[in-house]
Structure formats: structure tokens, C-alpha cells
Length: 562
Ligand code: GLU
Image: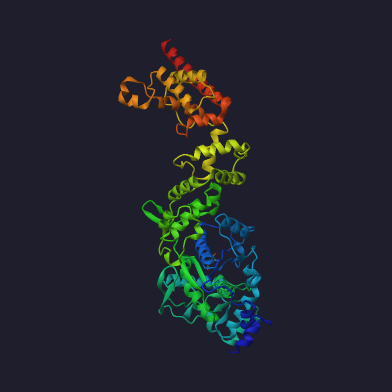
């Protein structure tokens, strides 16, 4: 068969040669050992935790070696394209400090662009044409119906599905048959003519998993679709070569395609990049472990972390903990270090499923947030509120000095030990809400209305905003004693029978009255931040609530006695 003529008929026109392309995309001028890694998402608009997981690995490896991380958009499948998706990917990763050196919407060294596969149509066609000329690719005229009938037949026979061996009907069409089809205007795709045998297995060195066994490929995969657009397999091989990628860290779901990729590199005559297949993120679901799922687990989406206001460092610390087995120990020794100084190693990556546990992330989050300075915390919350908070929450920042006091108190700044009350920005904003607005009561009073009335009245009668913390507390003790409560807890513990309770119960009444919560940081400071007017206002409101309850109780007694 005249393969040159066939190639010309299938893909007419002049294309640059392989050598031309080699010259056009020369090897990168980087120091020895520098790795070129990439992220190659399709622009579906959904970027998930698994992407971040792989992104951190690629970013760390590239940047620790003095190399390049680039962003390539695999948009060969138009059906999946969503407007603004690329910007969304960049923004989502930027939040976690993943910065690309070049790529789609980033720019950088234009030598290796464009980074949208749709804009690289010519190069894929040029190499498809070359493969046809060399007899390593051929046109296939099978229709969708024929292919699905084939799949059904194979499934029924319990055979591997696909286009291969004896099932690859168009593989051995004669020259005459091919031209007849072409003359009849039949649409065609271009397939790889596979030379592999799946019975033959090779040892493959995976950068993450170590030595694994990989069978040869025998699938005559499509390399160019009928519209001339390449498939992912074909495009990625050409791009990884000409973008001079040295290492690909990607999810282990791609391991199944590895035989195809290896054969494509061989057919194209390219030296392949090294591959490392990263383990999947798993979730404990009752007795079983399963992959995180888009449908069931909102925490799979990266948007989730920004919306909830997880601090990016917390998420990164957790991802690194899951990614590199020696990270946790290193971090324990270097809790305040720049994460970039961790000696990240591909070979320390987990070989099988990493268990993702949101509670563990929450713990890490509390810890990370407790380490922030008050002003960094304020800035973090302000940015979050600006994007995701309510109008009311944004209003909390109007009085900067007050916000600073609130945060210093809630974080235990200046104290011996930092408080770890803040978990995420959304939770923190909720946590501090009562400083700014009167919030509905969260906790129930344990004291009966009559006691609360007595306590609140006594408090209001003696309250002086000028009192320092100890003078203030002396007064609270006085109120306790006057109502049959022990003025200090030691006294109470020594003889609990002699008292109705201790000063802690009295403080609880005041605490719930002022904040709606039974657990808060130091109450005196809270009242100080609230100021005289607001403190009195809240105590009066609590007093009214107690009076209303008491009146209702008395009424019902009266009813009963009628
Ligand atoms: N475009 C593929 C994806 O959507 C990239 C796979 C790879 O990294 O080779 O994840």
C-alpha cells in the first residue's frame, strides 16, 4: 500500500516535520535535576481535592528542584468545556499557594505554548500523518452502531472490550476498500496500529509506586477523532514531549491507561517522561473505605474549603501529611517553618489509598488558626467575609479596634496558651457574632427564673464599668453569697450540701445573659468589649426573659388553684 499517498489523502497539506517541531520546542535550558511537571485538567469547571493533592506534589517537586510547573488545558472534549473554568482552576489553586510558572492564562515562556490543546491542532495532525505514513496508524470507518454492537458482543463473550486484534475490523482493510470508503465520503477516525501483546508484561518503575508490572497494550486506540481533534491519550503524549515534561504525577486512575501511553511514546519515537501514580483519597464510610465521591461528599470540591473558610495552610499541611510519610514528623519539629522548606520526595508518597478525614483536618485547622497573629487572623476573616460572608458579618469590621480586642480575647493572645476555638472563617465569624449583635440564646439556663431575677437585678444594681477584673469578680462573689451560693468553688466542694451551688453558677447566668452561651472566653473582658450600654441592655433583656417566665409559672399555679 502506498502509505504516503494514503496519509496525504487522509490529512492533506504540508505539515512541519518531526525535526521541525523538535527545533521549535527545544529542550529547556534548566539546571541539572530540574523537573518539569504539569497539571493538565480538562476545563469542566470542577476542580477537586484529588487535583489539589496531585498539584501539591507536582508543585513541590518542580519548585524544589528549580524546575517548572505549567498548566495545560486538555480541552479536546468540547462537550465538557465550561466558560471561566480555567480561571477557576487558577484561582482555586492560588488559594493554596500553587503558582504556575507558565501555562494557559498565565503566559510565561511562550516557546512551549499555546497551552490549550485546541490551539495545537496542527501538531497532532502532523504526527498522526507521520504515523500513517509509517504504517503505525490507519483510518477506521466503523460507525457508532457498529462499535456498540462490537462492545455488546465482547461483553456477552466475557472478553475484553475495545478495538483490538481480530475485532479491529478496519485494521486490515485493503487499499481499495479504504479508497472506496473515502470516495463514498464515509467519516473516519485515525487509530493507532498497536503492536503489543497484553500477555507480555514489563516491569515499570513508577516514581510513586515503585516497581510495578504493566502489560503491553493491544488496543488500537483512536488518536484523531472524525473532526480531526485528537484524543486525550494522543495529545498528552505529544504535549508532554514538546512541553519537555520530565515527570508526571497524576492520579492512579490513569494507571489503566499507562500501557496505551507507553506504546504511544514508543510509536512516536519520543523519550517518555517519568510517571508517578498518586494514590486516591479515600473516606471511611461505616465499615468500608471508598473513594471520595462528587455526589456524596461536598468536601471533595475545592470550593468547599474556600466557602467554609478553611485556612489554606491548614489544608496544605493536611495534604502534605497524607502525601509524604515523613511530613508529620518534620512538621512536629518545625511547626512554624515555611512549608516550602520541607524536603518533599516523590518516593515518600503513599503507595495505596490515603484516608481523608475531615475531623483530622478540623484539628489541624484549629491548631493552624491558633498560631496566627491577631492581625493576620483579622485579615483572613475580613477577606473571607468580603467574599462569602453576610452583609452583617462584613459590618463587624467597621470598628477595627473592637475587632482586634475580640480576636485577641478569643485567641487567647498574650496568654500562656493560645485558645483553639477557631476552626474555619465561617465558624469563627459565627463564634464572635455575639460581640457585635444580640444573638438568639444557644444554651439553656440551669438556674430557675427566680434565681436569675435576683442575680440579674443585683448585678445591674452594682455594675460599674470602671471596675477592674478583680473588683468586678468580688461583686459577683457577693451576689453568690447573698443568694445562698458559695463564693468560691473550693468552699463549695468542701461542703456542697451547705450551698445551692457556687459562684460558677452565678457567672454562668451572667454569661448566658450577655452572650447566649454557657462557654466563652473571660466574661469580664467580654463585658468590657461590649461596653456599658450593651452590657446593661443585655442584662435587662435577660431579666425581662426571666420575669416573663416567672410570671407565666405563677399564672399556671394560679390556674391550678382556681
Ligand atoms: N486531562 C487529564 C485529566 O483530566 C490529565 C491526565 C494526566 O495527567 O495525564 O485529569
